[in-house]
Amino acid sequence: MLRRYASWALPAGLASACVLPNPAYDLDGGGTAPTSTATQGPPTTSTSGASTSAGSVSSSGEATTTASTGDLSVSSSGDVTSSSSTGDPTTGDPLDCWGDPSPWEVSALAINDIAPGGHAFRIAPDGLSMVYMAGLEGDRYPRLASRAALDQPFTFVQQLAAWPNLGSAVDHASIVGAAELFLSGGVDVLDGADLWVSRLQGDVWTVPLAVGSMVNVQMKNDRAPTLSEDGRVLVFERNDGPANPYFNNAPALRLFESTRPQGGDPLTEFSAPIAAAIPEITADPYPHLMSCPALSPDGLHLFFGSTYPKILDAQTIIGASSTYQVDRPTRQSPWGPLTHHDVLQAPELHTCPHSITRDGCTLIFSRFWYSKEMPEGEPDSFWVATRTP
Image (cartoon, rainbow, N blue to C red; front, side):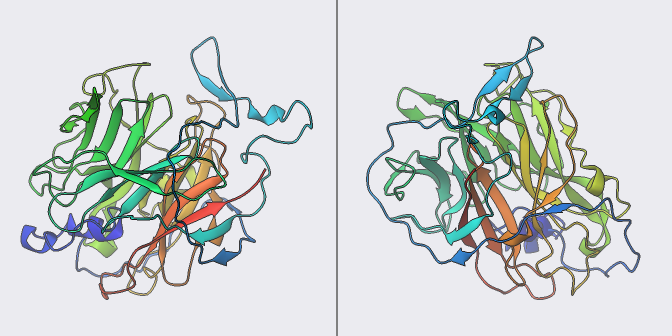
């Protein structure tokens, strides 16, 4: 996020001091702020009304069931569309939170035995488990927290793998299906960071390999992979946008999308990524940052963090990144208008969404401090936002 984004533009010696916390914002450490004004797009929808409380989660029991709350249909062209709006056949009530849900309710995320350095929590489509990376120094390993039911806390925590020599910047673990684990690789200042994938062989997760060269680009940092439940759609962040003046004209973070056939090999069959077009943001003359993608399991809803519509300088960078959402009726359709989830914001802190459940009712996100001029601030915190149909 912002801190890591800044490190990508720093000389190698300085960049090594900026690790893990926020791969969306570590850009550069210097430069002058722009004085021009941005052309702002159409008004965005805004959500409000959530109450915030410091919740606590500690639990026991491993998830063994699944909870599906929305149907997916496949058209004759192979496209995926959502059909959950038909509602409960008995009561007519909606089955998910993609229509007209209640306001978000926000509470702090806590997991028993979370392990030091826990970060980038990715909740499973059914909401019964959550994968994340942990470890403060040196190697970081994927861990899985699970629960027996949606109304119970997460308690059972297990380490999934212990890969040596991958470095401290490995992050954003995301399990796809039963046998693929996608990750952000470490930042290499010479060749850029890559997306990685580990595959389950028996009961062992293999040492991650870089996703094919069609996806990973040399001299760019490809990070924060998020995938549809069927693994066919991949969205990630890359520092490949227009030059941002606040970060010494380093390329702004933008979102990219790639696809593969059903069951396609993740090392060879993903398509060349295409930059995600979010008209209010990507058509604006000012190079706003876009990061922290969280794709819904059906691939039709995308949450992300963005500094839009702010022109960044020493004052406006404070808490500049907040959470937005865009939607589309099919995977081949363009993304629609922005919805701004400003209710998730806290004073002076940035927000970064990490994952959303299949029914759209549970969102995991983080809040963090970043300022190029004042690098020290409040540590990252992790939150759960819930709503009802």
